[in-house]
Image (cartoon, rainbow, N blue to C red; front, side):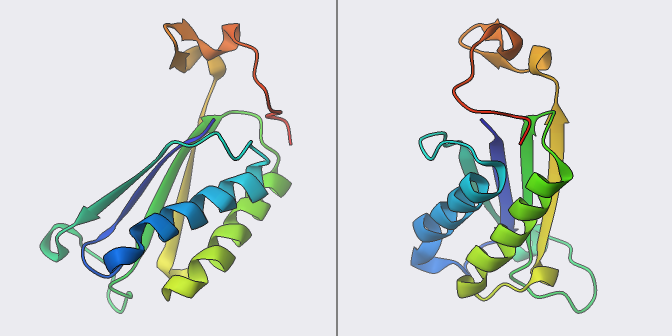
Length: 128
C-alpha cells in the first residue's frame, strides 16, 4: 500500500492528468506487485517559478516520491523504475526526466485505521 506523491510543473499535462495518474498506478502494480485496488497517489503541480531544475532539464521533469513498506527486493525496485519510464513515455518523458525516490517505512511506523500496519493482515506480499 504505497503512498505516492508526484511533483511536476503546472500546465504540461493539460487534460491528461487522470491518464498520467493511472500510468503511475499501473507502474506500481507491475513493479511492486500490489493489488490494483490499492490506490494512493497525489499529483502536485507547481508554478514554473516554484520549481528549480538543473541546467538543460526538460521543463516536464517529474519527481515521484513513493513511501512504501520496507522489504521490496532490488528486482522489484528495478521493475518499478523501468515500468515508470515505459508507461510515462507516451506523455513525452524520457528516463532522464523522471526522478524516483523510494522512502521505505517499517510497518510499525505506518498507521492505518488507528493501528500500526504491523498489527494488520496485508492482502499482498511485501517481500517481492
